[in-house]
Image (cartoon, rainbow, N blue to C red; front, side, top):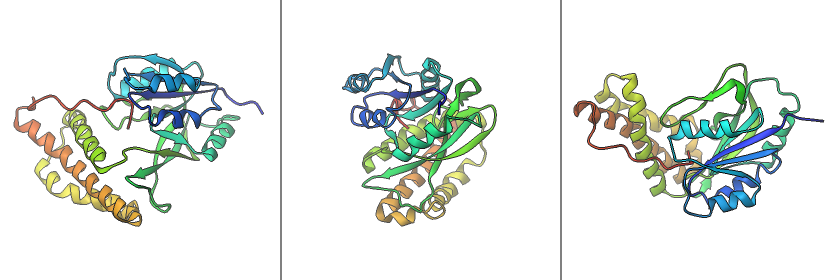
Length: 264
């Protein structure tokens, strides 16, 4: 049965260790677009060898970079992936199947996380994001970090899983928490949240409990415990840095860390 043609869109920056796996998982796509922001490793060569169309553009921020990549797509239906993600074989089959007769403007896919030295436990809650969508009815949210796809029209859940390889060690996860919390200061400062000192005291505990107990990462042994502690630290940093910004008169003590380009 004929299906809607599909463009897979990926943003990259020095992702030679994961881009091959990512693109191999979507080899069925009618088009693969890679928007690179100046890689100095073999990322672009690997992408070209996998049949991707590779474009280069200076990094403009997560949301703007992904929107630019989406705008490069030739087909109406787009699957948006990070360079350290890959579709499972079953997910690829379900994406192809739903495109035979799409009945929504966008579809939410599930994401399984690699947590330091193991996959998250089977019964832990999976993250979920809109990743398959009609680009004529969708756009990026514009957030500095944790950007998302905003869809105009009905959105349905697709029982398809993306494997996210993410950070391979604790150092990488802590570095990411530091960078992302700096970027989130801009978004949160614009929303002017109140009671920052109370949030610094209370919210990290709430964040730990939600990640470790409610999302089920206690099933992941020490990997889940360490990940929950880093997540709580990230929650603390978001409000501590915003408090610092307010105390300094809104200018901060230096520019935020440059985000790692091409990954979430």
